Image 1 (cartoon, rainbow, N blue to C red):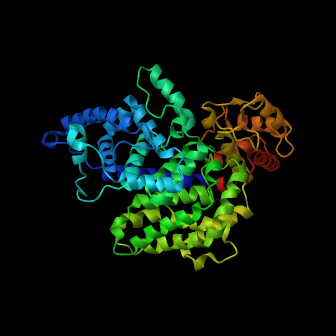
Image 2 (image 1 turned 60 degrees about the horizontal axis):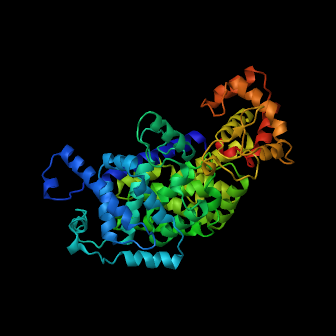
Image 3 (image 1 turned 180 degrees about the horizontal axis):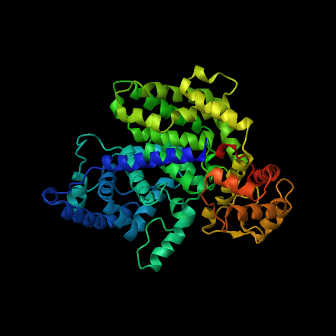
Length: 513
């Protein structure tokens, strides 16, 4: 699928998230005085309450294995923390410990039985509410939409994720998601300007237990409780951290069957009298996760052929089931009474994902037997494979290379996100980063992907098209091709450069073309 189309689809996903989160968040009413307050004074009071309760909240979770209070307490506090955008921003600037505590709570290692037992125990209240007025007030808070429902551990996970994801997503960024490797620099810039840095201030704030444990525990919670907001957090981490998390996540062997079961349950509800229980954001989040892990990944993830192939192999047995579910979603879109979901399924281009899934896993079968809307994307992929544009492929390879967040030595797993800083770039071409001089020396004459072969032509073509720094400069493919032709860069030269870059990147650039 073209990069532009993928970017548009993901921006739609972020837009849905932004709209959804404000709808889902109830205005918090802490007391009768709050109920009678004007909007501005209410917001100020809520901010004051949030800051007051932050100490109590953080202290109660100082031991993430033995929380002091119950699910109702934590959901009520989190409702206060997420009640207004201003409250979240205030906490991001003044109480980093709230977010650090929540991420640690979610990601400390637990076995599956421990996680299940832990969630059950938290639903039982043993708080001394009669002896503490603050505790009593917090326990008396209710979400006015569901005042009589029991507060569950699923509600706790959902509320935690709501706060964390809303804190990470930045409205001022086109994609909504900042690159984790840049947050330290942004924090330093804010401090130099006399501002308070917003959480997260460094990449490691989002994975204090390390990538492997973080991915394992997030997936454990999804597996046990099917919380879609945690799927969203996974999407955010996978998109914002380059290739840092993808190798860790690929070690989870059974996730395709589980995510498909979650998708199928949502579609079954949507196709029944329970259609109102399915929110558009649930499907958008699951769809984005499937695209990231089962088809094409994000720009920054497609840097390691070995890892991406591992994920394709994991999805291989589920290719037909996935295609059937995508077809089912398209059929439901034309008949459901939930018009928001129907619009999302078409807008998010489930049909294009289906065409891609067909090409990767089932191209020997007739795609129209699943759904006719899959046909156009499937045909486009076949045409692109048969008649690749060498200049478009060169542009795609360059974009992948210059967006790369990892060491340029093929096989090295070091990334900017893990290191918390950018690496040094080659002194010749100035385009390829290395985590150490040892890696750069090994890469220069690497038997499968030697930097030596690409250094000079890479510098020349970047000079020709006007890429002077180490970052990709957005330009239409036609303009890129025109500049190459005007500089007498032949088709053969372009093809050779693409082959060399593919060797360094360890994959074909087709899906970006």
